Length: 125
Image 1 (cartoon, helix red, strand yellow):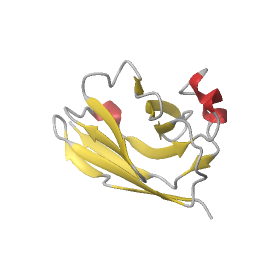
Image 2 (tube, rainbow, N blue to C red):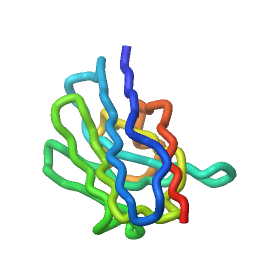
Image 3 (tube, rainbow, N blue to C red):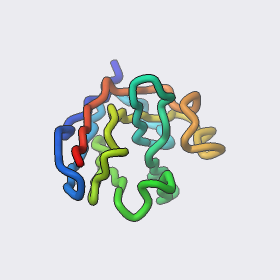
Image 4 (cartoon, rainbow, N blue to C red):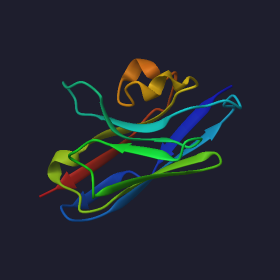
């Protein structure tokens, strides 16, 4: 049984930092992209950052580039978030794709077949 469990969310003031973690278990041996998405109520879920460990590639949404860093080690995916802004407030989800089709568009939800339950990040001004 595949499980993705996020942690590390919370409430911070603007300019602060948080580090999200996603612990995975039960994944097939062949996985491709690992990513973080976020969603605000009433809006579509959007890709924040992704990594393709086999190729050593990372991808970022323009609004977070230079502030967020995605990393991965064995069964854990992290998202270091610095200089947080109120517009970063959202539920954050980790996702894993088993097919390299995710590389066609790393931020497209259909490319990911495993999802966590999410962790809330709230940034106050």
